[in-house]
Amino acid sequence: MDVLYGVRMTGPLAPHVRGLVGELARLGFTELSARCQLRLAAHLSRWLAAGGLSTEALNTPTVEAYLAARRTAGWSMYLTPKALAPLLGCLRELGVAPRAEVIVAVSLAEEFLESYRGYLLAERGVQPRVARGYVDLVRSFVVSHAGAGTKVAQLTAGEVAAFLTAQSRRLAPKTVQRLATALRSLLRFWHVQGMTEEDLSKAVPKVANRRAALPRPLDPAQVQALLASCDRQSAEGRRDLAMLMLLARMGLRAGEVAGLRLEDIDWRQGQITIRGKGNRRDPLLLTADAGEAVVAYLRDGRPVAALDRCVFIRIKAPRHGLTAGGVTQAVAAAARRAGLGTIYAHRLRHSAATAILADGGSLAEVGQVLRHRRPHTTAAYTKVNVEALRALARPWPGVS
Image (cartoon, rainbow, N blue to C red; front, side):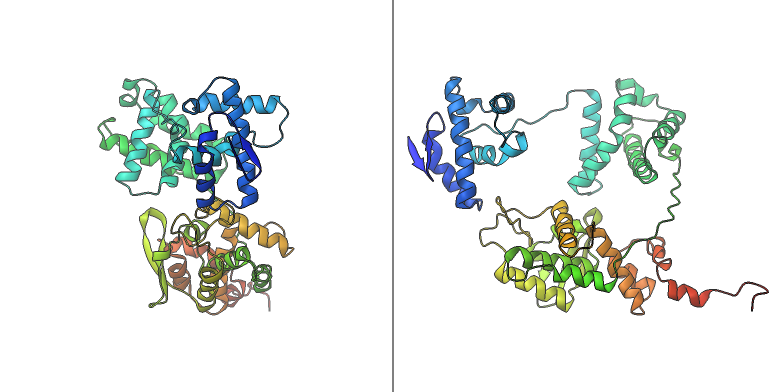
């Protein structure tokens, strides 16, 4: 029996407590956080011992049973699989607990979806999260129309159109547009695979989304308030300031900021390589103020014990790179500190675009900075530059 950080460990996890402490330290857990994880491990170990179970029994059903027992006993913390994930991850890394079970396809529809996902990743070169989004969008269509192997071959254009029409009655227009895009992609894949005789992607109706709302940029004073809300004396503040600079000055997306890696920064050329949609690699000149903020964070903010080569790292353990959601939440927190209400990362991208127009830049320059593939996408910003539009307005006939 070992006593570490004031925690006494008994049961089947006791022989592994020192290895667990080392793994927690490697992941960047503070002493206080490590003590909390050890207490959780001690309770889990006692529960396993009481049930006559070994560490090899730490599979999904056992974990669910443990969490149910913990809730029944009146505990108020560490009650979900997500809360238990850091501890289980450490135990699996040490070889103490079995690896998480691999979920395999359990139906023909799931096999079709998995095959489609593989096509998106291997042939289309999309990011895993994008592939997951496409698969989730078409799941209900596949389940209802591919439940039996012969149904796909018998699929008709009418059934395709009827499905999208039905979905449009309950989904927002933008969501229906994304569903239509994913559905066309799936049907093209099925045709290429020989699962359908004709290309039914042409049967997917076009979805109108006449959105009257304009991009809502922040004015320069609001952007400055966001930047000023970051504490430049703390590691978290320096990190958030660097991210905000990349968003507001260079128009990056939250996912692009999260995906930025150390090797993507070329300090000699003064540029960064952005990993954009569809595995694109776009070089962008790094603005002076954004570069200074990134340097300040790398020198005095980024954890030395970071677990990967992402530029922006979580403050709390495990110290992996931030996700796009983490970047967005950092923007939201800065907006609350600045008293600006609810603001998320994409509005800073709009702000960067309108700032270029306000300084006399052209739409072509906006499209180049934002890396739009089509001029039509950039054209939305013509509605924002009211002063430029005013010069084009003609007087109403008969009005002096």
